[in-house]
Length: 164
Image (tube, rainbow, N blue to C red; front, side, top):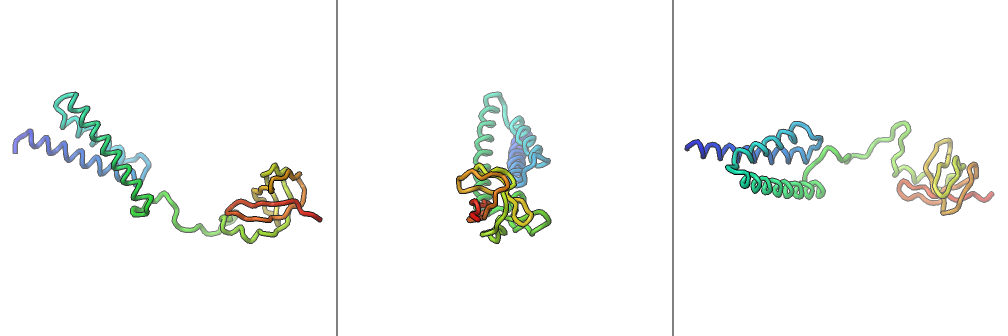
């Protein structure tokens, strides 16, 4: 194996290492050690393999195309759940002080309270001493008016003025 072959193998290994490190960075983002190291490996690999500026440009275009394909594959795998990512919280959060998940709001259906702000149509309503973001059915409701929750859609609470 002569020196040219050795340089060629080193350049290819640098490109492979760069793609692997950039792939790791795509799964665990944060522009940290794998991402920076991968970019450095790719740039050095291009310089090692290229004999001229034109060849460097062609190799760079090929590297960018492969990075695009790698990104598309990673996004596809992540969106299908084939790869795990620490960014998306999969477990349901436990109820903590001051926290109510949207699935907990069904119990509010039919509750009566008061508009803390003017509802035009959205604002804040107080129910049993707890303030919630609420939305009226479309009517303008003045601050202090008694309201009733008539619909819960996820985290959206729809209220109407309570007729006494």
